[in-house]
Length: 209
Image (cartoon, rainbow, N blue to C red; front, top):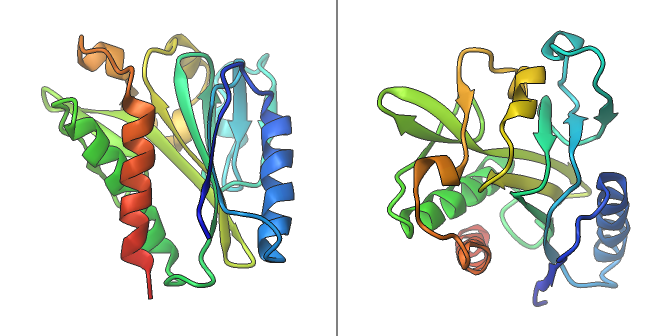
């Protein structure tokens, strides 16, 4: 079954996006709908995953939206590419670690197309850029698996405001910074969505049984 590719040009409210992902998950679980890749942006919002801690909130005045994805607290906003999916692992290798590697490799290979070298870190999930010896996160990953169907996704910082990250300890990592592609490179990233989608679909084949 082919994967449906969906792109939203206007910002989508976070809870609306999650509701739609969960509705699609139910349909996919009953073999009534295609898998999904959904590219979008959110209005500014702080979200907390299943392993989040109140200690990660530095500015107690901010509102935190509790979600059921994995991971801790992070920020979403304009200029950040949200890559959501609903992917059925029932007919693929049921290996969550390998699925996360699919995500990591897709981002790393995409950034390499723009002459940006990045890497994954087993201890600190996400994609990192080495800025003169200082590790800075450029992409955050947070997924959930239900009925062997994976959903939620990852976010890639392209040209978003980084100041909101100062109000939290992003992903619970206090000794590393967050960056964006616009800080790393002066290149234009107009076609990055298509490249990411193609890399992701290509890497998914590594889970075929």
